[in-house]
Length: 216
Image 1 (cartoon, rainbow, N blue to C red):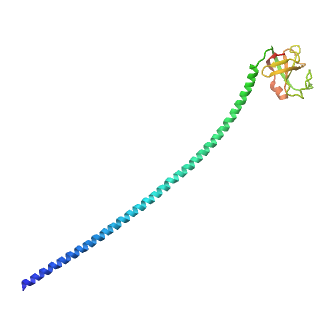
Image 2 (image 1 turned 90 degrees about the vertical axis):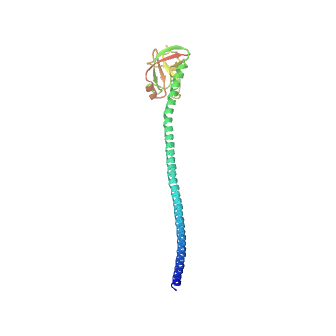
Image 3 (image 1 turned 135 degrees about the vertical axis):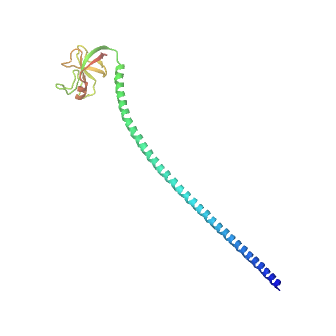
């Protein structure tokens, strides 16, 4: 009887232990599965966060890169505009000296041309002055009858007829060819008086020693 009771107790103990072991294993599997699902959810959340972060950074990078490009373009346009204004100003400044230089060269060329085209004739060195048609005591009409007031551009000189015959064509150094068509009380010997349209020109002409040539 005691042996039977002992055997029953042992059998019951084995069954109980087996049952506990099975429950423990089942609980362990559920726990592992739950942990696995939890880990999967955690990993998915991390991946989503990383993806969202990358997109946000990428968007920020685009904005950051675009802003300097816009500022750079604006700066380049301003620099280009300033350069164009400077070029226009420089071109304007360069034109004025160039124009003055060209005018001076033209004047020099005229004088040089007059000198180079020196004609053949009887050469004299004379003291030259200038007069106008409105000088004190002047009638405006030359000794040979030329109305200087009606012909302000006439190329006329007053001479001493004993040196340069009236009606002669006379080349005057630096001034061109004139007609000996007048005389004057102070014009004696190697002296000539060159007709000019205005008083200012007469003062500018002053008194000069010039070479002349009697052409005809």
